[in-house]
Each structure stands twice: as structure tokens, then as C-alpha cells.
Length: 106
Figure (cartoon, rainbow, N blue to C red):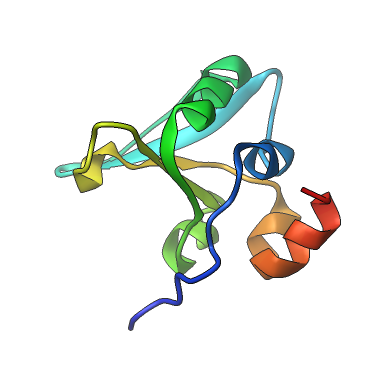
């Protein structure tokens, strides 16, 4: 099944507004060749990753079902295992991106 990807790009500011932050940490995972590798990162580390990203997108259905609604492609990297999936607030995972962009006002 081919997923719709047009207009799925977010700015750094939009992405920061929908992060799920718990005790100053944000959960993430990488899709490594041998399986998912997850961990918690500090909010400042995630903001740095967003600032230095080549691309920030809303994820596809599988990652959204795992509550990881943002995927970040870092600069100078292009393998699938370099994609950082970031946990997001519940309302972001359930709404259309165009509606959320209007709500966050960025």
C-alpha cells in the first residue's frame, strides 16, 4: 500500500510543538537492519536534531500506530537506518497534518 507523502513536511517549530516530553526526555527509535532500537533523548538533544535535519516529516501509518509521528532525516546521511522516529502527542497522531499546521499557527 502506497502512503500519501505530499504536504507531510514540518518545520522545526511545528515539530517541537507536538513532541511528547516526559520529565525532560523524548522517546525515539531507529529502524536498524536487525530491528528497532529505541531510547530516550533529552529535549535539547531532540531540538538539536530537528535544527540540523535535512528533512522533518510526519510518519506513515505503522509508526503513527506506535505513537512516533515525526521522522527526521539527518544531514549527510541517507540510509533507512539513519531515520530518527520521534514520539509525539496523541492529538498529532490522529489528525491530518494540514489541520495541525493551522492549530499550531506556524
